[in-house]
Image (cartoon, rainbow, N blue to C red; front, side, top):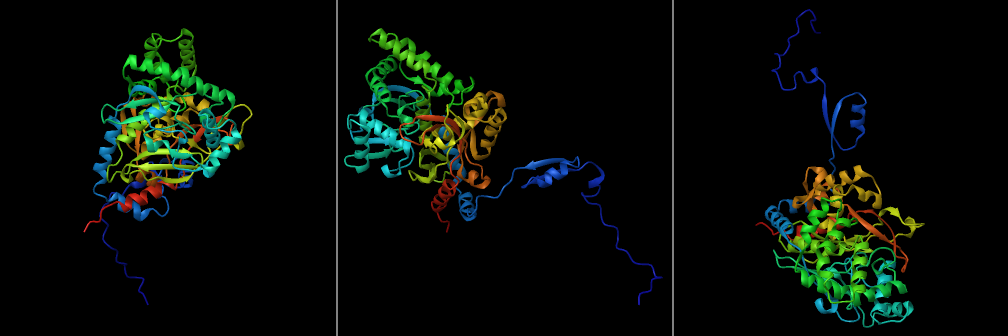
Length: 485
C-alpha cells in the first residue's frame, strides 16, 4: 500500500529546447499532400504554406533510384541542355522534298511515332489520301484509299526519322516544297513543309479539290518564289525571330502572328525583286501575310535543330522529341537514342470552331509538340496570355502553366525570355526523372483535327502526353546505367 503522506519524487526539470514557447505566438504551418488539413487550418485563421508534394508515379521507385544514382546523370544533363540552348537556326533554302530528302513516289513521311495504315486515324488517312491524289498516284479518294490499304508500293515512315517535322498529320510527299534550316553552331539540318493556312487543309486531313489546287499552287508558285527570295536574302536567323516574338505576345505554337510578320518583313525586299510576274509575287505576299501560322513551319524545324543537338548523350534523362500520329503519343530521350516510348494519345480540351464539339475531335496529332520539347509553345504561355482565347482557359492559367513547367525542366533558356516573369528564361529541357517524381506532365497547346477523314480543323486546345510514356522511358534509362562493381 502506497503511503500517500510521503512526498512524491519528481524528475529534474527538463532542459530548455527549441520547442519551448512554440505556441506563444501565431502558428505558421507547412502542409503537404491532401489540402483538407490546410483548409481546416485556414478556417481557424492560421498561416499555411502548402507544398505541392506527391509520391512518384506508381511502380517507378527502383528505376528512379537507379537512374538518380547514375554518376553520369548530372554532367550528361548539363551537356544536353547546354547543347539545346546554344543551338542556332537559320533558314538557308527552300527546296522540293524529293531533292533535299531523297523521298521517292510512293513514300510518305508522317507525324509522330511509327504507324501503318491500319493504325492511322481519320485525319492521317485523309492527309495520305490527299497526298496520293496530289502526287498523281490516284485519281479519286477511293482509289487512293484502296492503294494505301493494300500497301503495295507504299512506304510510311515518321518525319522524325528524316530530320523532318510536320504539323498535325505532317504528311510529306516528294513534290512538296520544304523549308531547309541549318544550325551554324552544331552543324545540324532540319526540314519542314510550307504552311497551308488554317481550316480545310491537308495537314488537318482535308483532301477536297480546293486542298489539292492549293498544294499545286504552292509547288508551282509559292515554293519557287520563296526559294529565290531566301537565296537572295541569305541565311535568315529564325532563332532570333523566336526570341523577339516571345516579347511580342506569341508563344510559338498556336500564336505566331508576330513571328510570321517578322519573317515576311525580312524576306519581302528580296521577294519583290524576284524575276516573276507581279501577280504571282502579290499572291505570295498576300498568302503569307494573311497566314498567321506561316512561321510555325519555321519554328518547328528550328526547335528540332535544338533538340537534335542534345541527342545521344549517354546518361542524359532529357526528352528530345514529343510527337503524335493521332493514335499514339511518343517521346524520345537523349540517353536512349532513337527508341520511342509510346502511349495512347489523349484528345485536347479547348474551344471549337462553328458547330463542332468534343465528339468531332480526333486524339492529339502532329510533330508540333517539338515546340514544347524545346521550351516554347505551351511552356511559354505566360508570354502570350491572349492564347487562352484560342485554346481555352484564362490568363491565370497561362501564367500558372509556365511556372509549373519549371518544376520538370533542367534549365531556363537564356535567349527565350518572358516579360511578365521579369524576363525569366522559358522552362527548357524536360527531365524524365522530374516528370516521374512529381507526376507533372508537359503542357501542350495545339490545334484539333476532325476525327473523320476530310473534315479539316475543328478547334484548338490543351493536352498532355499519356503518363505511361515517362515510366517506360525511365525503365530504359535504368537499364542503360552501367553496373558498378
